[in-house]
Image (tube, one colour):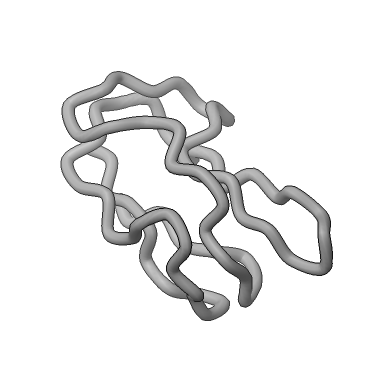
Length: 69
């Protein structure tokens, strides 16, 4: 499943790594926008297959940030 950004923001922190297990609503990435931290969470339980962004990247709303299977 593709995990997408809800907003245009900067990737502040990548919390999980490839092959990490995640649960529903567990943080994968933390975004920063207008001095606020916004978590991007997993919609399913599974394993992270890829992280599509790096810390410091500017990303758009709807951009894929991770893949969880």
